[in-house]
Length: 312
Ligand SMILES: Nc1ncnc2c1ncn2[C@@H]1O[C@H](COP(=O)(O)OP(=O)(O)OP(=O)(O)O)[C@@H](O)[C@H]1O
Ligand SMILES: C[C@@](O)(CCO)CC(=O)[O-]
Image (cartoon, rainbow, N blue to C red; front, top):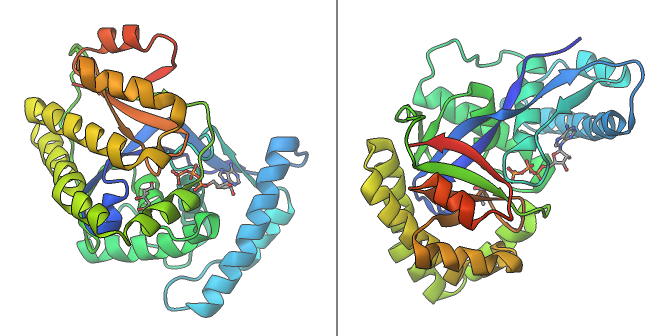
């Protein structure tokens, strides 16, 4: 047996801000994917995945007992499949900010949830919020508090615009221009990050009045502007605001940027060859880059692995 594919995602803008009601924009990233698969004999990676699924099943059992009105699953079949060696066969790197646990949650919901909301029906704002709430509860198993956005993105396979916490919508993004020079790229930090400790640092920082003011007057302001510029196709303003965002992040989110990247982060701002920002919670995994001249950025960053995810 092999189930349908579920894709990774990229939160282009909105990391941390969406916890404080900024806008956010999340797009599917089809380069990586995963699917539930059955096997009689498991190699080490699939055996690990199978063990992880076993623990997840116990969690879902609890969840369903505690919140039967939220979601229920065909637990008998799910348990039988996991006992028979089912695992999540996935190329999505873990702890890289591209939603490996989100894709897994989406795949389990798709296959085992009772009365599920399907992608084929008319997805009203209400249904989207219900799905997000279910996914948030399911994904919390993997990294503490989850907004549910990653699984939602993976499940629907369409860009999602977050206007505020309770106001999300499916959206379209401007079509890519493959002969353009501008690009959004991922830069591999080579370090595995962890979401929960980074979010804890952020929550701790929020106790500081100065940090809250910076967040509101700069970080959220530039994040919101970037989302609007990106969706509106205003590339000139987009780069201007991404530069401001890049600076604010370097000055105020240092723990989320691995130390050895502080130098090239600043270099991008100084040369205007590219601007770096966090990809998800940071602390390792991928770093997101924006450039108006991909060849130039590649040249300056020749010691690093870049993956292009969108072209202007
Ligand atoms: N193929 C898989 N099989 C089983 N469990 C998996 C698989 N892929 C991911 N997971 C689970 O998801 C966890 C990683 O989720 P985590 O939320 O920490 O990172 P992420 O989803 O890759 O990144 P982010 O949430 O920042 O986008 C793993 O520790 C594991 O429990
Ligand atoms: C850091 C964060 O804002 C995004 C992580 O992808 C956490 C969240 O909103 O779930």
